[in-house]
Image (cartoon, rainbow, N blue to C red; front, side, top):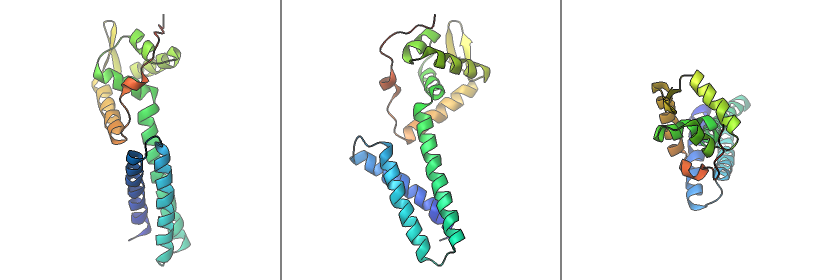
Length: 168
């Protein structure tokens, strides 16, 4: 097995091991992936050192492994924490007014800027007094939904705001 293939297998193994650990050890979240990635990275390094690879091969494989792990963490946190992805996911479920969005997300100004960007990017469009997803927005919302499912993030209900902060 080449170093790059071993790196790819190492990333998949780290993700799988992290998912198993997260299932059985509640409350550790992303730490389970970090720990499993460290274990996988050490295993990868040992495997590559035992094969007659060069230092350059080892370094290349470890860099590919690190990049794969970082990409996984980035996509995972993006699908969970991005205000824009949360707005798109919420609007995927049902149309909402700007006031409903303000009540849902603290810091209305942050959400207002995101709404402006989503309007400018043709991801959402006004429809009477509500905002709706455009076909382009629906595709992105579907992608974020799949990422949330893949990373087993909790439903958006847990992020609901308790108070009504009207933007007006």
